[in-house]
Image (cartoon, rainbow, N blue to C red; front, side, top):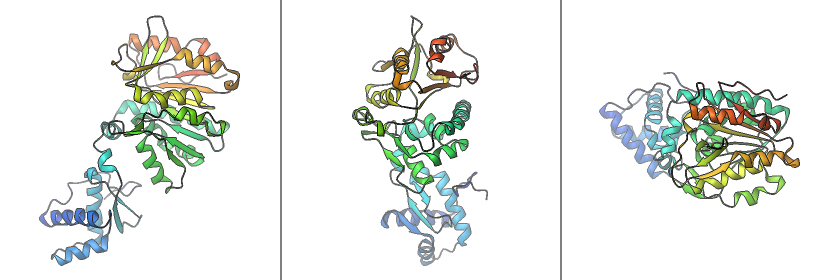
Amino acid sequence: MAQNTAGVATQPSPPFSTDRGLVTLGLLVEATTRSRGEVAIDTLEKRLRNRGIEWDTEQLKDELDDVIASHCWLGLAWVDPDRTRLATIAGVRWFCESSMYEQLTATIPQCHLLTNQFAELAQDLDRRFTNPRMLVGAGATTFHCLFHERCQRLRRQAQCVLTNNFFVALRWQEEFNDQGKVHLIGGVPSLDMAATVDNEKLAQWLRARSRRPDVSLISWHFVKPENDGSVTLWTKNTRELALKRAATDLTEGVLYIVCGQEKITGEVPKGGKSYSLERLLDIQKQKKNQRREVYFITNVEEPSPEQQRVIDCLSQDRFAEHRVWLVSPCTGLPNRG
């Protein structure tokens, strides 16, 4: 059976479809529940033999691969590459109930175009940073951008990562064996966003220059063209404003704002909070930020009238003059002089 690098079957068949399979699955759940979340395969085999059930060890492991892939709500993962022990991942059952989990695992072709553009730009970070401090915001798109296959070098070189994104924190710890590089930003856990929100103390904490991120990767929920020709960035609610504003204001080196084309709209829900691109431009003009770069990345190919208004605004010379660049399939990579 084909497997990916995580040891999970890429095309799982229905796991444990026989009676003995169902008994095995029941014992597996019971074993992980009673043994503080971890069970050895030889222990599971012994319990099965006591019930008169025999499995070939490798066949059992393949069946368990199918369980991991098909029953994500169990939150199971292999502890070691040899597949000798299984454990439950803390919090996975909770995360799987979030709407963000559905977005994270959905196959969205448009997302690939956006993440590919980010990966292309990220190849250029070596020219500026050896071991960057990073800040990564909540959302499925930021997760997919950061863990793009072409961004492995960026992840390896990062000195540390600040994030409020639970999925980023868990995936980072998995990739680097919990080396202490990732730090979860304090706040109130949100089931819907799979992130901490109400991060009100973040801006104050980041004001110390030694803590400011060199590179930030965030997304805003909506991008709205205004009647006067300006553009505003929006959150769905006040609870998520603090981190997005802190990252936009206080990133020292390179700020990436990723935005799917469906987020560019003339209507935003009530209760949202806005951030003006004019404020961003004023920050770029400050002498201390004369080397800071901002990339607004979107996957718009054939702009609607509202999307075209956003593109026209960001394409003005005054933005490029102060190192704010639009990156889109319909405009190409920016000429940064």
